[in-house]
View 1 (cartoon, rainbow, N blue to C red):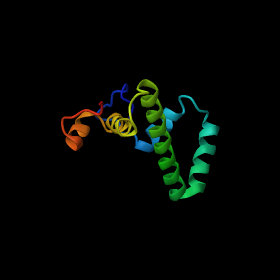
View 2 (cartoon, rainbow, N blue to C red; view 1 turned 30 degrees about the vertical axis):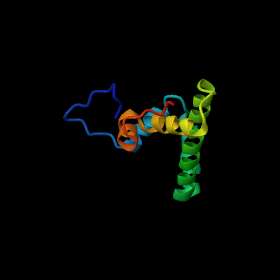
View 3 (cartoon, one colour; view 1 turned 135 degrees about the vertical axis):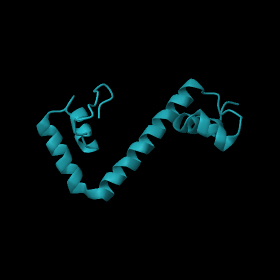
Length: 104
């Protein structure tokens, strides 16, 4: 359900899939969306999972490149810790690594 759309108590709640389709139609034609879903069905769960891992790896590389760009003097270990902090958030990072920050 869209954050900006109030839900009335007497209205049936949309499924998550319907909400995703609504959001995708904001910038994609219905025909293109149908083709995309057809391709996703054809590659199956293993193919979709492989896409998720590839996207995750790509995001991590983009974050790492940004950290290296902003801090070219940092060593690999410091960059890795900062990437982890950015990916999991400050609270979880502190729980995992203690009070020390990623920065040298």
